[in-house]
Image (tube, rainbow, N blue to C red):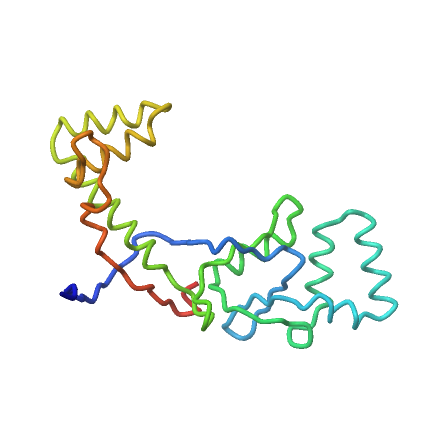
Length: 210
């Protein structure tokens, strides 16, 4: 007999900034910034095309800055030399606050200037919040509510947090107890986990929201 699933539309309003990394990053010598009217852009460079197009004077200036070990100078040189269209691999709109922060990192030798990329849909490139991350946030909220439901469970939660050596196992066991999915030996039974059958679709975001 086929399983029956209910489908619901879910609206979530974030209460704080969210960053779910893809594990990929853009290094500080791989991008420049561009202000275009009221829009602000991060432009990822095709560095091979950039260096192939340099004239003798530009190469000499690059060599001079690199020889000095002036990393902020190299970033400033890129910003001045790279063409936002001819040398671009792609460009991404960024919010004003992030743009200003990145501008300051270019001039500051103590700032790494690395841009950690958000997770995007592999087919479309659209930024997303993975459904698994949303599910994890819901699970955490439910567990937090259950853990503080009565004083005995709050005391057990404090013991789990304070026991560094066995904290991961005790936390898993305590989680199973809260969700009513524990075996007789106290270990969690994944087949009884109430979240096992919950599937949440990825939430797409507008580029300007990233």
